[in-house]
Each structure stands twice: as structure tokens, then as C-alpha cells.
Length: 149
Image 1 (cartoon, rainbow, N blue to C red):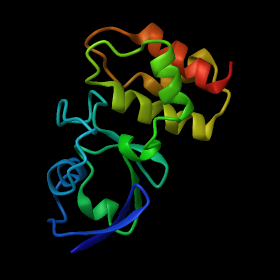
Image 2 (cartoon, helix red, strand yellow; image 1 turned 90 degrees about the horizontal axis):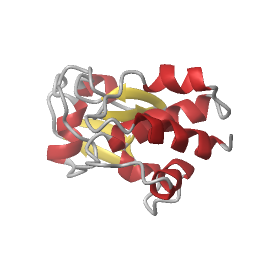
Image 3 (cartoon, helix red, strand yellow; image 1 turned 90 degrees about the vertical axis):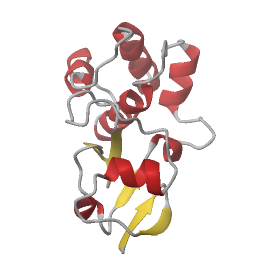
Image 4 (tube, rainbow, N blue to C red; image 1 turned 45 degrees about the vertical axis):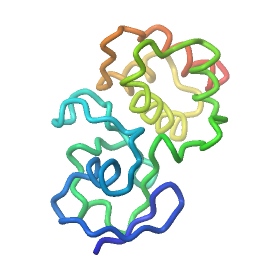
């Protein structure tokens, strides 16, 4: 059994040490907001926070999450009131929506570390998150709006 905190709730999961965190979240805990994209940490769809830092859940083994705090899109703000979530809605960022949880979680980690990011900071932080629909301009605008810039 592995103990960890997910979205503020202490959890105990019966998972192999090598099982990717993504599958624990989706299959064992039923938190399906975190998406499977590529399985190789290349697209960012599976981004969650591990002790406040953005990580790719598809390649993060459970042993790395043991005893730590995991935040998924469901835990960022259950009511959708996080500034990024509000900006995403106000600016109509999503098109298909598949990548959006990973985009938001990556941006949330950026804003937690750097509340007033430059355009370069935003571009650098989100460079590893792919959007098939190409909504990058709206994503950047929403990050700026959430940052108050």
C-alpha cells in the first residue's frame, strides 16, 4: 500500500511502485480529468502537481509520489474559481478541450512560482504542452489575464 495525499485528501492505494501515477489517478481513484496523451511525457496532457511542481503523470512512478501531495485539475479548484479556470472560460480557450487540464495545471505551477510572468516565461513554461487545435494565443491570453497583466 502506498500513502499519498490527492487533492487534499489522504489516500492509500494498492499499486505497484512502478505503476505510473496517471493510471493510479484515473483507474484506481476515478479522477479522469487528467488525460492520457502520449505516454512519453511529450504532450503535457497528463500534467499534475506533485508537491506544487508540474510533473507528467504518465511517466511518474508511484514510488515518486509516495508520501507526497498530488493535485489534479479536479483539486485545483473544485468550484472552478481558480483565476486560470475563470480566464479559460471568459476567453473561450478550449476548442476540443483534451489538452486543457494539462495546460491549466502547467500554467498554475508557473503562476505559483512567478505571479507576473513575461511573455517569454509563459511561452517557455507551456512549450511542452501540445494543443492539437492550436489555441495557443488564447491560452497565452488566459495566463496573462489570470496573472493580472
